[in-house]
Image 1 (cartoon, rainbow, N blue to C red):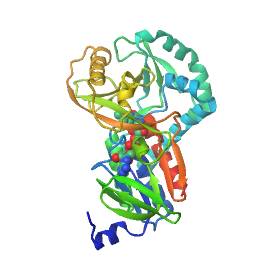
Image 2: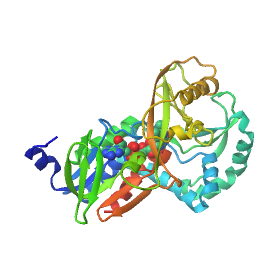
Image 3: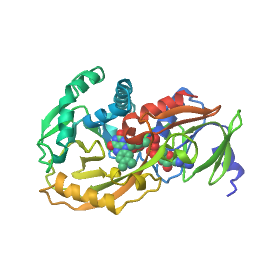
Image 4: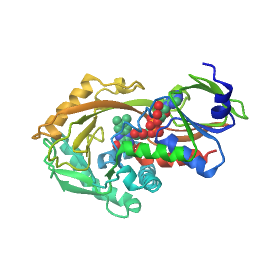
Length: 370
Ligand SMILES: Cc1cc2nc3c(=O)[nH]c(=O)nc-3n(C[C@H](O)[C@H](O)[C@H](O)COP(=O)(O)OP(=O)(O)OC[C@H]3O[C@@H](n4cnc5c(N)ncnc54)[C@H](O)[C@@H]3O)c2cc1C
């Protein structure tokens, strides 16, 4: 499609910063750039009609990592790296709350609980036994003992009689968070063009030529915040990872409140608007779920449904309302990749399953690279 003279002049000329992706990272990058350079022309290109990756699809856990996740990370990362991961999540949640305010994101610190299936006696015992040493490791971050054992007061079925709880964990309303970020960014004069997919780019040292599915134009700098789709544009260590979620219809007198994980974080659920949102099961079929295509599979959906019936809501009648999926970016390390790729091109990608927690700081770090 040929754009008019007016369209080029008004929307696509003299662009200082082009951000690709309007997820939590892209929007925070825009906020940060517009604070540092109030006169700059900042443009966001987003391929979806709404942000279309993970930021509007997630479960809304403001979490730091369950105890078994921390222990599992310690097997593949150094103690210093694990400490820094948790610190990053803690600082990121603080920043998100400061930027948007608790009521705008419906921040509720109801605690996060890790459940252990009955067959996971050994894992529970290991986590229980190591709680004290993990609390000691993370003490400087939380300024308190983060993890403790609590009884199964919500009467989940087929699980150990105790959870291991992190009292600092919270839940947010994902939709409200994203709406608030979008509003904030637009109020700063940042333009967002939806339904525009970046197909390629070329950095000539002075500026970057950007080709999209609609038009071509030039920007002084290009910042990629495309997370699970990053492989389509750059050769970094990041792969797509699909995550499937379902939600029930409202349930009368629902007692369950908080955020819950089990199976080393592969399953997660929470209350929202008298419903249960339940996601996970990627570990049932890693190969199929390593995709940037949205969609549901019978194997994961059936597993989620049966766990919901048998474990989460064993004595409560409920009906399912809907299901969806989102795409995350993962790699061999959990640390995000925030770096300069060439003179004028930068990226902030590989956010994995903790983007709510770290997205605000990753956006800031990406903006600070220019
Ligand atoms: C089901 C699910 C549950 C989750 N639950 C939680 C949770 O409870 N807590 C938590 O902390 N994290 C959770 N996460 C992870 C979290 O949502 C992500 O880490 C985070 O949203 C990543 O943000 P982002 O901005 O980097 O990427 P995204 O939100 O994916 O944004 C990238 C954007 O780039 C756009 N894009 C990609 N390629 C192009 C292109 N070529 N041109 C134009 N636009 C492009 C995409 O459309 C997308 O909107 C969950 C993720 C999923 C999928």
